[in-house]
Length: 100
Image 1 (cartoon, rainbow, N blue to C red):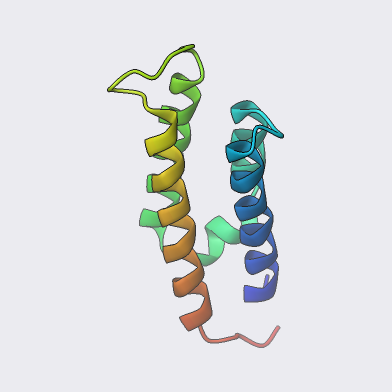
Image 2: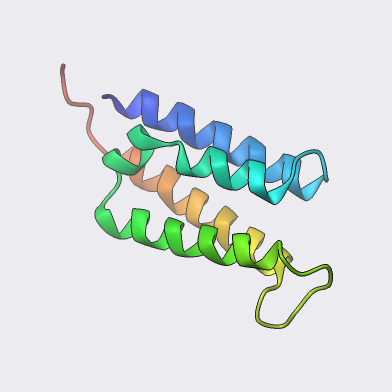
């Protein structure tokens, strides 16, 4: 597993975030894609996976509501997911390549 594979998964996730914000995919589709990022989650420190899972669980719960709820604001969760993705990218770019 390389940093490049993890970055590929991260970029796909970032595109899915943009698609969700544009209404092109559903929250469920984004969640499924985010949970299917084994290389990305393995390459990052464990706390990243824990935070991602928490955000995805909350996004999943927010999808149950038709209106914005102060506890489950989908817009706020998407902002937090984008922040997570930005930090993950910074971390991956600082990670030295390990020869396979």
